[in-house]
Length: 404
Image 1 (cartoon, rainbow, N blue to C red):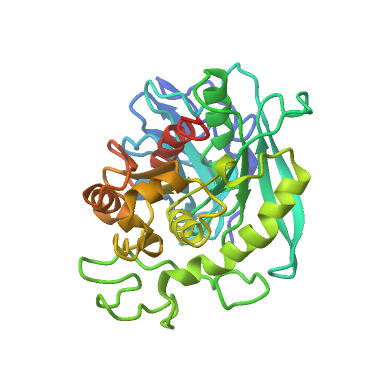
Image 2 (cartoon, one colour):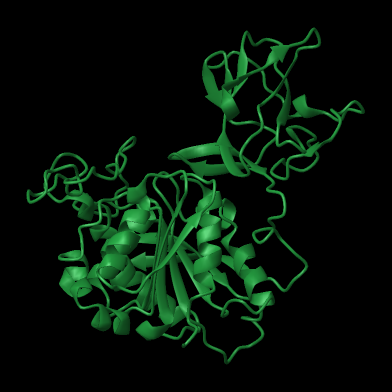
């Protein structure tokens, strides 16, 4: 057990704040540190008089101990957007008691929002707001109660006769149903787009995609298990040579399908019928979309491929899997671009410019070469991170349910 007392009062009020700084928006109420300056450097001040060493995960920044027991330090300029981080005290990672916590990397972690100059589409604004509701339901596929977050657009509770299209929006590996609203700010993105007349009012369903096929009972993926990296040229998903059966995540046959089969059954057999029965939805496929980031993008591909009778709009953000190619993708339907375009109104692929090409660009190029209509977005200067995915959702949402 960590033999250091950590007090939330460690970030007490001080009249001598560093110049050109303000508290991070992700601080809990009343806490002045961490602080961020106009160069996007982060200032820490932390009280741990009994500690021998303290560092911060942001840039692996070492803090310096003062005679008063406060540890202080400044990071290098950080990239804009959302960052997970922890404090490391005498070799033990702990959450920052003055920051909000977020679920990422399979655990609760501190999080920090670094502002991006001139970019505010994901910030809360003085516009009508929708609601994000906690929604429990029973899934027969996994024989358990499951938990989703549901965004309903502004006016949903007042316009009691209006029905809405639905977007099923998936998080990435190590995150859960909270990620898109807490870290991604999907609700604010949609509020702002709807207020500007740029997006059709819609319901967004955010569920927990952490189900591995064959594990039964909705069991979560074993701790530490990660999806395979995007394969190199000439390799199939799962790292097998082209033409050979790919290995599953634990070395068994099945490959990437093991990351979407179980969750796909929940979505199609349980979640969609329950949402349609519980909310005022437009329940035909023309008014149903699916999208996801990273692992959620991989799940989006697999689930939509098997269920084109359920989804007409598809969004794949930074999906780390090897695109199987036009010959086999979507069960060979990509070889018939005109037929595919009649079924899929929007096929949206995105990635950050600092990601590997297999996260999106290779898929887009293969589709273009085959004449398959698609929309491609590459976020400039971003990596495998929420700034990429916020911008991806911002673009994707404007294309949904336009009836053009």
